[in-house]
Image 1: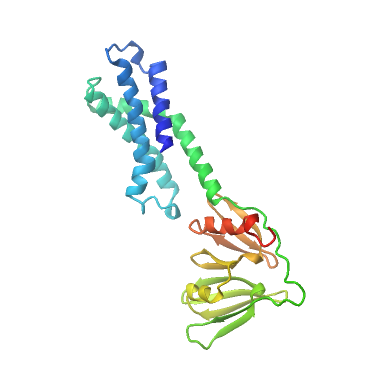
Image 2: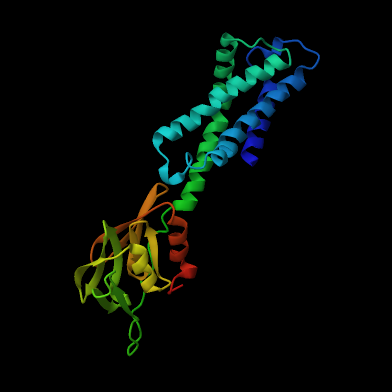
Length: 270
């Protein structure tokens, strides 16, 4: 919400103080009030584009489905919307006719005046996504259980109730779903092992029940105690294991949860 107010104040300041685009020579008894009104138009345009539309059309603005094309259209929309609203406002207060040439002229003005605040909004949005989805960085190693203390045992049972896999929880790396099967990646000593179980990922996840074994993607459940490094940026990141050299993607939907789990305060060493 504050971004819309800042844009409105910026446009009001530019138009009232500098009076560009010929407005300096324009004479009207309510000139300053009319010029200031364009700031409210700019604020309304920003509010509609950055707040109202994403809430009215949440599926269209889903971060998980966001594309470069949508980003381009989303940044062009306020230019044309602002040009239309500015022309309509100018015609309403009697400052200009509502015509296609005037609409094109006002759209060009909106582009020039709104270029700087638009760049600032893009930067603020990038910083927001970077904080939300940015990589937590290197992960502190998890110490092995104290001597004489056995790691919790896991027993994963397939849909048929017969096929099962038993292993220490500390040996589990991650689970990956594909078709109607899940592949369990784990270590047997220093050797990577893979076992197929016919089951949904959610069903196996519910059988584990350990706080550090969590969903990081719709296709993956990961043992965070085995993660040794995190790479990536605001567009998404990956969890790395060593040994062996394997990586698992983190989807945007689960990024905040994974980032919170990997924060030093929530880490077993923290």
